[in-house]
Length: 464
Ligand code: MG
Image (cartoon, rainbow, N blue to C red; front, side):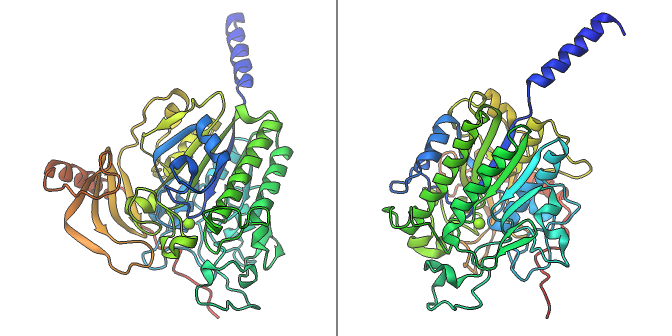
């Protein structure tokens, strides 16, 4: 080999060593609304750690979950694909239930698997909700989907009413009685507690995460922390309970915020902050059906969880990476689907081949502040495409209110809103902009051509 070529190769090798793979931490709140954080304008909920994370990082004003409820949203995050492609959506059932036998198909390549293939240690600490694991369904465990370590609940905290202590009141979801719920806590495949004390979940998630970070500080890691809360029923530990002027919802968010603070503190203590991308978001909008006590707020946006109005799917999005991401706020449209290709790129991982991915790499926006046009974004409710956004414009073909609203309205003349001017979707302007209606309708028709629905995983249940 010629000496100069050898020198170049050596220098390239040194450069590669000098840029270690960044750690990746993803926090996913459950049913947290666009208006629920201090840094998104909530007047009484106190979230100082997230506010500081936003001040030091990049706060998105137009970040979207890729579905309007839990299961499809989580499938989208971990596959980078619209959930209709993986069968993780259904018009009637909406999410996986405790009695479901389906789950994320093993053919899907999760973000954890992709990062693992690039040398990452991987952990899921929190709520899974992509399959109810059982001995005869080993494929539904997070450990079968690329996670080396797992601690948490298999699904939402309200899915197994207690077998020993029946709720005394019909509105059990808004009460704070942990013994009313059989929320089974697992570490890996070991059942730790069949009815865990939910008041301790958020601090326990913090302790587990801090331990995982410490144990993996010398190698790249991916920590996925999908919180159990503020999904109802709501529980906070003694330290936070009864402290917030916003009531239990504010207590729960203060504790969730503290949890984020503990994990950022651990990253700093190990000298890892400058080599870690942290992203915070929510799986869908607030569960307004729960009322003002235990349901959240979508701020200026219309409606909440379950709906394809903005409040159902536009959520907080905060990216933090000291020294790499310039502090600021961005109105660049971005979605949960984009996290997969972005994180794979930063990790130097190969994207899964032979399948369509629906996200766009956001790294030019994160690292260079360049705008990224992610193109058409589709709002699915279950398996049906209800609406789509392109640029500032949003078109609705079908509308329906939040979870619980039985009425879907199909619009022969689609509704059109300019979200840059009218984020509340209060002024319908299709008659003024027929060209825009046509352009978005065509873009959606093109999208549909590339989508092959598969049988839903949300249908099948345990038969006795
Ligand atoms: Mg949710």
